[in-house]
Image (cartoon, rainbow, N blue to C red; front, side, top):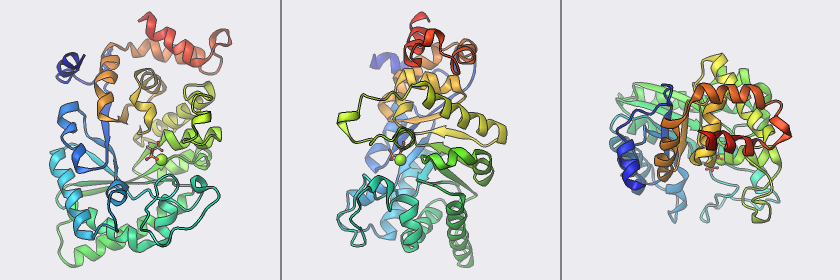
Amino acid sequence: RQEVYRELRKKPSMTRDGVQVDLLMNAGLAVDLPQLAEAGAAGIGLFRTELQFMVASTFPRAEAQEKLYRDVLEAARGKPVTFRTIDIGGDKVLPYFKGAIQEENPALGWRAIRLTLDRPGLLRTQIRALLKASGGRELKLMLPMVTELGEIAQAREIIDREVRHLSRFAHHLPTSLKLGAMLEVPSLLFQLDELMKAVDFVSVGSNDLFQFVMAVDRGNTQLANRFDTLSAPFLRVLKQIADAGARNHTPVTLCGELAGKPISAMALIGLGFRSISMSPASIGPVKAMLTELPLDELTAFFDDNLMAPAQGLPMRALLQAFADDR
Ligand code: PEP
Ligand code: MG
């Protein structure tokens, strides 16, 4: 298998009928970087910056943050990297964060962009480190757990201020700055066109989005196998997102666990995703699926089944049968 995957790295990242799909990897620490070449990823679709904070015993200093981001960009050798601003709170706890509060529902609580907008010093330090590390290169930044578009505007103000600050001191700035939002809170589903217009790109956080759409705690093992990520309602949600991205010419990607299983990756591509980000170990298996995939047939399959699954069968069973037949 490993041998097969290694051979596959040389092949273009395309469906059998020639449609390009970018396979990116998720990362979060310097130790992940060699995987970029080993897995043959097209770039880093999600760099979880909070991991540096989670393995530390105190807030990483600005210099340490900048160094990590610079190392990541160096290792990427021009491949795109999307940095997510710190996503702490909820299931990601920092024991040394004195401002943390006891919450009855941490997943629905003071976390991610909500927390960093309330503690703008944290965000400012991180953004400054990212801007400095990206001097002369493109910077792609994305905001976790966006619920309202106002949060994007607020973050953008902080970013603009840091850009002005650095340019006053004649710092080498990024050649371009792209700001994206993670789509993981259902409120955004009801303002998809406005969202697509408000950002340069959108990345679906399917782990959290599934948790919130189905009202099922992502960490609860009792419920782990109860609801299906490939059920028709969730696939329809994903289709609406892909369609809204295409309609507004806003790039859309997906960086949750869903992207890493060949059968789900196949579904995502059939629904219109042309870029997905996964753990490095998944790239080989997903690429093996991709290069065999007749996308025209899969598109027709979804046209026929997404709104009215054949014989009322579960979408997962129909997708599995589609894959087995081919
Ligand atoms: C997600 O929610 O799908 C995601 C990619 O982010 P995380 O798993 O880090 O919350
Ligand atoms: Mg998430």
